[in-house]
Length: 261
Length: 205
Image (cartoon, rainbow over all chains, first blue to last red; front, side):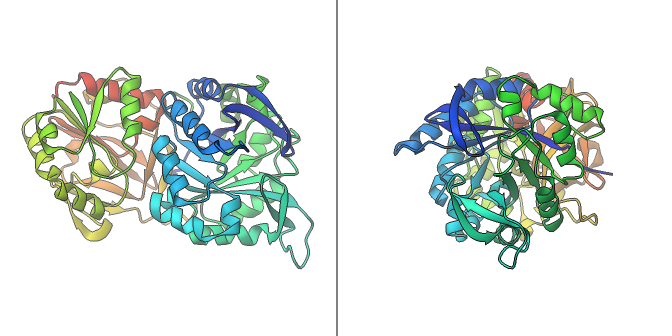
């Protein structure tokens, strides 16, 4: 039976050209050179790399383009980039700099047609809908019990997360990143209920994000959590775990992983 | 000189950067004369067959590529580059270059868990030895992104297969022409090694 390997993805939050890490989307601090980290993870067997540009300054576009370009010269696995993508032009600029896949988030919630426009310009498979989601409890307004939040976790939109997921898939997103705001940076584990619900509802790959603290969490989300890929940040950025060690652990537990590189 | 054929079909710089990583200087060109005069030709591409053929013809690159292949230049096709080297593609019901007999079909899968496009890392199994596939071991995976797959008419040209609800041809070779459905430039070090071997290849299988 053909099944693709599950993917281990490392996420680098880049602010002003430096690697940063947040806890529950606030208190970001600088923790190193993104290009160096990217190269290190790549050589250690990482399957895919994601950059989120969290630069606030006005010259943000050129900074992230430089970072992407520098990483693309040294890292030969798929690169995915997001943060402030508002137009097809933003997407194609990032692609030219060396990004494979483009993540859209807040701008797509404000103007959903952005998803379709990007899919048309760069192909469905390269458009990743990244969603920041918080738990709110089931209600008439939020049948799934989860709400979409934008602008780096600051602005709740009153939109049900499952409804937006299905809309994003319909508009042509090729992949989904499910970021749990509640779990982000806590190291308490992924929000399994959320990833499982979304994984069951769509036919495109789901990347689980937020909350990984120990290898068991990755195993859980790739099995009962139904995710196709697990995204990690803190676990590897601070040196507690290595990319190859995490992959080995998953492989040993019976998860299909790419084990030679 | 190694040239990378530019016909508006995707990001060629990722191929160029991967070549640079293994010490190969490759020039991106849309000039048919440069393709005719090249020592080696890389023919990459992502996108749709119809648009790709229009773009090749508009730049008269179709003839230059055919001459390079017929003239014995080592040529490496990648992804869409492989697909449009065959006779025909179901994508846009398009007649393609015909450098190799065969056609390109869309994945028609019965298992709802398998998605189209086939995107991600998958194992490549060598079924016929070829200098460009030297050193690939069981379990080695490459990166794929495609909704259509090649079906060469002559089974002898199939060098490697991958399994996606059955085996499909993911690398083929005949004489000085070799092509992969996967992306060596995005497949980590196993992919880079393939590019490195291509840079030294004399075009003999």
